[in-house]
Length: 193
Image: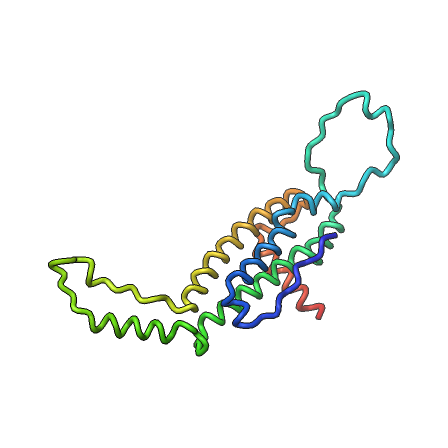
């Protein structure tokens, strides 16, 4: 069975390193969600009886996706799928807190202050150049991180929806959506701790 994604060491530096953040999300999604069909196929029990040579004499078309044993499916969800989703949720939530916290270590603070001061000293004649009055200050890194997190949360929602659709199809779950199933798993996990 595939291993769930290990959670990285959460620090503000991890969040501001967009390469590290995106790599964690990409690797986690690739190992679990992008290969969900292979993961579910791995749960299907091979033939109970040995190989029968007569079975090759007549071609029988079977549906491509055989249902998965409910116990194996539940074990996969409890031990791999939901822990991976939770690890990604924890990272995105932690980084969202980082974006709302003051950032005393922002390396661009002095540069933004200098740009703002330079803009105040400019003489603008909008009759000669109507665009010269525009000033677009550099975004703080917390803003850039917040934009990235909004994108990644949207991507996460799409990926979970697609993955959950395949899990429901193969495992026959009754939960309507991925978030409902994940929240139910969180509640049951909280009770057993």
